[in-house]
Amino acid sequence: MHKLYHPVTHPDLSDIPSMYGHERFEVIKANLPFNSGALLDIGAHWGYFCHRFEEEGFTCYAVENHAPSLYFMERLKIAENRQFTIISKSIFDYMEKTDFNVVLALNVFHHFIKAERDFHRLVDLLRQLQTQVMFFQTERPESIQMKGAYRNFDYDEFIRFILESSSLREAVQIGKTDDGRPIYRFQA
Image 1: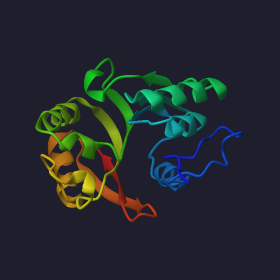
Image 2: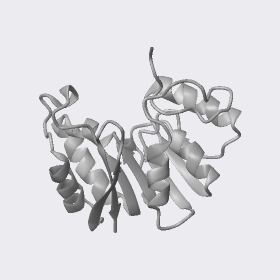
Image 3: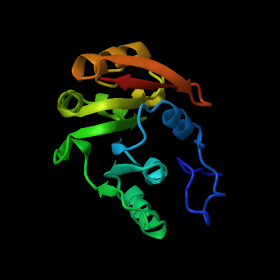
């Protein structure tokens, strides 16, 4: 049976199985230093985190450039009467706003280190983003997805890379998902 990536927050669809449950949201929520502000979700998929954090009082921005994901995110946003902003382009092409209280980079940055051009665009993005807190999770370096990548950081190398490329100054592991991948909180 195929599974969705995240749970669907709409009550009529909440029984559809998903790879991830609510645990990442709960870990992130428990590690936020504030209860409102602007939140950017890079690679938002169907908008799960924007749905959840909008309920918590955040003004959310969902960046997604995968057409099928955008289709479902837009419909779920309407169905649940949400207000979050959908940005239907690559994060590299969105520079209208670069200042966010919270950035979610969950299982997305590893896509940007596979090719040299995207790696350099990621460095530029990290330099431009101004945030107080970023939550980060990535693919395992030994994953088949990362075979032949331009850069293939282990977890510690990825943390150092982000710290060196951004205005963020410290990182701490705040949890792990059931598949064993750590979740990190970066702070300015």
